[in-house]
Amino acid sequence: MQKFYVTIPIYYANGKPSVGHAYTTIAADVLARYHRLLGKDVFFLAGLDENSQKNIEAAQAVGKGDDIQGYLDEMAALWERTFDGLGITHNRFIRTTEADHAKAVVKFWKAVEAKGDIYQGEYEGLYCKGCEAFYSEADLVDGKCPLHLTVPAHIKEKNYFFKLTKYRDALLEHIGKHPEFIQPSSRRNEIVSYIEKFMTDTSISRSTMKWGIPVPGDESQRVYVWFDALINYLTGVGYGTDEANFKKWWPANLHLVGKDIIKFHCAIWPAMLMSAGIPLPERVFAHGFFTVDGQKMSKSLGNVVDPVDIATKYSNDVLRFFLMREIRFGEDGDYSSKRLEERYNGDLANELGNLVHRVITMAEKYFDSKVPAKADGFLAGAWPAYQSAMEEVRLYDALEIAWSLVRQSNQFIDEKRPWELAKLKEDKMLSDSIYVLLETLRHIAWMLLPLMPDTAEKIFTKLGLEVSKELGQSQASAWVWGELAPGATLVKGEPLFPRREV
Ligand SMILES: [Zn+2]
Image (tube, helix red, strand yellow):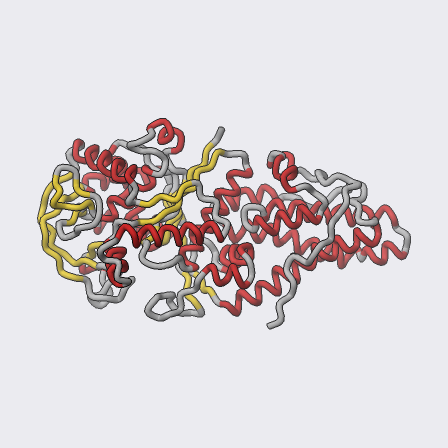
């Protein structure tokens, strides 16, 4: 059986999930669901980065500085509950304070050490606490961290270093040979330039930290949080604890990341893996950032959007739809509640919801709510286009293909005017038109399954299909035209997306 292993970044536990976290997570969920539909064995890893200094500060800020693990347990429960509530289908929620992760990090460290790639040195440099990363002067904007707009601290300490520069040629060669490794291509160019011009050996331990995984053989140092965090992708599938499982899933097929952390995922991480003698992931895909109403989303600005609020006000599917449709995955975009309301009333209520309602109402009126005899439809190349959009992580395009069928169907109704065919007693034309519309709805529902799973299931029910039976068949047979059986009883039910008054 083919497998698909997809990961998202492990998030800091120092606050509740924002719509930005939901964005990456939902995208991975869409892909996990899509690959499951293809009949693949799928592993979707999500989780929390619990060894970060930021978490300790957050725990102290709420008076839990003496019980950091307790604080992390509470936060992890909150994150998992949120993901579950949003309908995320991750297979494991990893926490980097778990025992198997410590084992994996120790094993990995020792492998890199045995390769001769770790040495002791003195680090002196500029450190942004927010990023938990070192910067060179060249990286700074007006002397400040480009992300946090704060002045980084000057740090001087004894650290262990990883011989990152030893892998410069190997990294460039790999990226050159595998254009799919870093996507989109704009990010690939950025990384190549970083590797060629700026990459230096990197410090992988801290002497000042009290929290985190101790360096094997030197309890006075802790493993630098990024070095430990990246290894979660290995721990999640059994590295160091369950080699059979690890062999089954690794290498990951896809790491989804934000564009701010590509240096870690596309240079440091592959070099770490080369050093440890572990194959590289197939693909790293970096998505863009989005602003909220034109402004950067930040706690300090107080404009952080809570995905649970949107899901509660509308639904999980509306949240998924909006994020995937409004912001092209891979590019930057803007989130706005006004746009959300417009898209709800436009795309969802007027276009999709109205189509489903019209078609089923006509079938009720002219065919006593029964599916009429089969007829040929207009899918054309929709499925191959949808499939390549999904494979290439163009989630916006996948939705657009489903929506083009929605629009074509609405147009088809306006052209055929079934109500006139009924008046003229054009029975065959009327029957053909209604079948084409109903069967097209079934295909639309299949396309929506990974993207808007609840809506897809509601459409199946309206089409008189038993959801478990419909999903029980293989994608190969479900995607064929004419699977909707004549004679089945349609169920009109409630409108999918009732119009909202603005
Ligand atoms: Zn920063």
